[in-house]
Length: 71
Image (cartoon, rainbow, N blue to C red; front, side):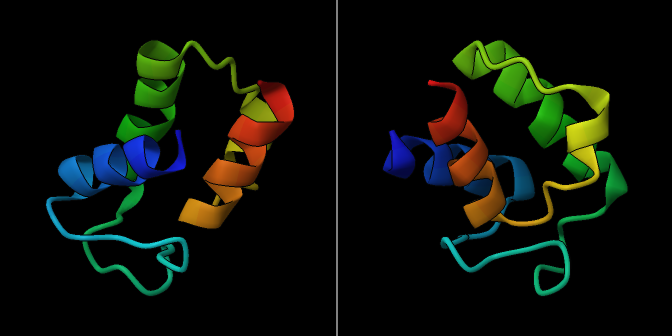
């Protein structure tokens, strides 16, 4: 699942990402694409992300940890 999520995020950002990629070190990861990632996670992977958690998700590793915690 991890590789699938990483590839999926890469396709949204249109750049290769790793577990270490974040909003801070990935220029393409702007606020619009962040919302696309969050909405897409909910749609593509059936994951519900409460609005208060959205601001806490700042990196690929944050996403992977969150997915792991809800699956």
